[in-house]
Length: 64
Image (cartoon, rainbow, N blue to C red):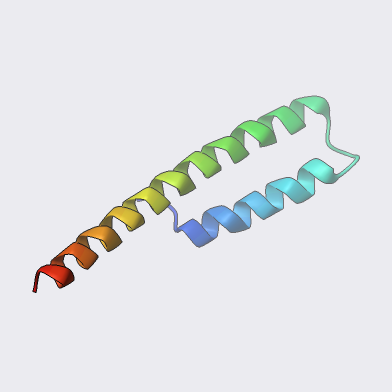
């Protein structure tokens, strides 16, 4: 089951905070960056799905 979009945003915030730390190595930063990109992609897909559902609901309500 996919994470909720709010959970993705929370995790992205945590990743940004970690990446801003001076204690993070270059390798760790790269791993965090990749993880962040995946979360953004997943979030975009969730948003697209929600937008499609809203559009369908709008079309159904306007047909009535």
